[in-house]
Amino acid sequence: MGFRKDAVLNFNTPWMRNDTLAKVGIAVLMNKLKAMPGVQLASQGFLSPATEGAAFGNIKYVDGKKEVKSNVQVRWGDENYLKVYQVKLVAGRNVTPNDSTKECLINEEYAKEIGFIKPGDAVGRQIEWGKDKYTITGIMHDFHEHSMHGLIDPIAFKHGGGDFIHVALQPQTAEWKNTISSIEKAYKSIYPDDDFSYTFFDETIAKFYTEEQNTARLLSWSTGLTVLISCLGLFGLVIYTTETRIKEIGIRKILGASVTNIVSILSKDFVALVLLAFVIAAPVAWWASHKWLESFAYKTAISWWIFAVCGFAMIAVATITLSMQTIKAASANPVKSLRTE
Image (cartoon, rainbow, N blue to C red; front, side, top):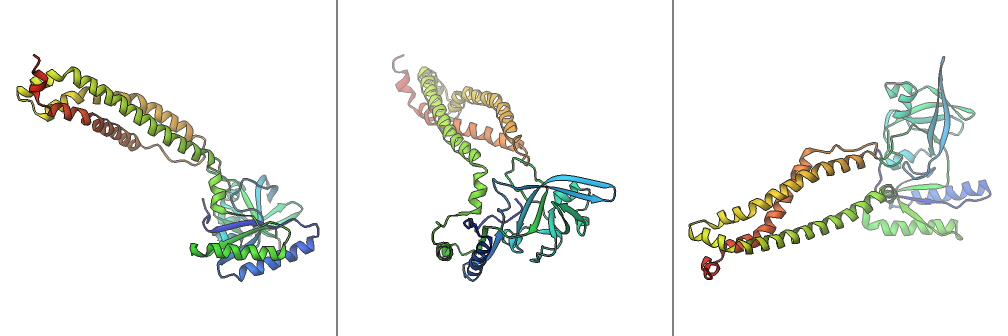
């Protein structure tokens, strides 16, 4: 997705009416977080790179006679924001913690939208963001700010504070519990009247695909049940067929037919029916999969080998089901079946 999503913890600090006290509280909290051994890096700012919420701004780029107005997704944070999420810069440099300098970063998509074939050429240009002019100091590698259902939007990032805290934990997962406990203690020491509530960033990403996950679970259960019912039906049909042809099987064995020959004769018609079912089902499955994938802007291709594997799997399951009864019937003593004749 273009950023780090594992071992990143997010939480909000409470809103305070006094802006000065709010900034002091966050500054103290950030110093405590950075001093913790279990914290790799901490940042404050706006929401995480990918989230269900978003902020947009009308940004204008003017280059002589050329003027491009765009509705751009905006993010802001301190100089550690990109480092926490490991968002790469393809050109230029990161923003600096200097409030007097109007600097910003844009992503590759926005650089292309304002007319730069090579995104790096946009470094040093200016954009009008609100009432201010910002100099583009770096180009961020494109990342998915939403799920794969939508295209990557133009994004602009500037240095700024905020009440949203981003914490990159050390990779030792065994220590996370202690680290989170330490973060909570630091939080409660500054905001004693507020509950500490946090989320892991990868869980936020997973929520983008809740519907797909639920559908996958439902399909897993329904597919398993369908295969079971189909196998039971096939097994019952094989029993009925072998019982009606039991004397034929006996005669064939007396005339020298091997078990393999008899199993082949009994299974041939059933395997043909399974292949016919596959021929009917495969186009329907391809169409349904294709229609489902159309809801994603970024998607995999439907490869032919998936259907080939499914076809072999169908035949394998059917053959195993058939063999349970056909081998038994073919191996039986023909004298018993012909004794009444």
